[in-house]
Length: 305
Image (cartoon, rainbow, N blue to C red):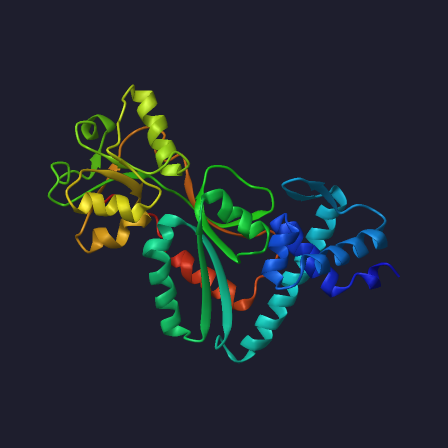
């Protein structure tokens, strides 16, 4: 009888605590009181006879039993969402929702343009777009908070199905009138004499750049450091010097002639890849599968700028 007594409300509350690691945050997301969530979690623990969380001063971490139950609850929640979505889509892609998580560079122009182009064919589809650090994008997919992740990855992750993967070089980005703009590829030594703006050390482009500089024995002192690519791009556009980025991040601006991008010709600069990620073992709603295929078509192997 235990399986039949795993109530939907209790599982929803439990899953939100497992996702957020906090009763307070879970309560805010679900618009209920923390005490209501605490009672439901306690009921599940009494029912199953095991602790589902390890309580710490800074939050709650799922126990081994909690991890098993969270996987079950997540599967059930995602499957219910899929069924509802597919029922609504029986008469074509007239309604539906796609939740996306991406690295910040993809959120500037690439994904908004792809969404607009897709909605031109399917105007009833709604989108949610969250920009985050690469590891957080993958985590959002694993937690079922995003249907599709688009990010840069350097290693395989358990539980993630990679729908598409392609190498991603690092490019030097500059104004079309910059002295290096006549070149399709550049070396770090060629870039060294010029002022440069860089992202923070947690950015994958910056990490590959730093490794390459270390191998060459070159030290770049950035005149500007920012966690926002828009700030770096504006610096370049106003004649401040160079920055670095992935090809997709600047693709539209290069096409419009606003910027020039030259591939950095150094060993190791292709040490990461663009990945389209989904949750392994999940049956995706039809609308998500359709947009996933559409998005894959927007990611051809990049040519040198």
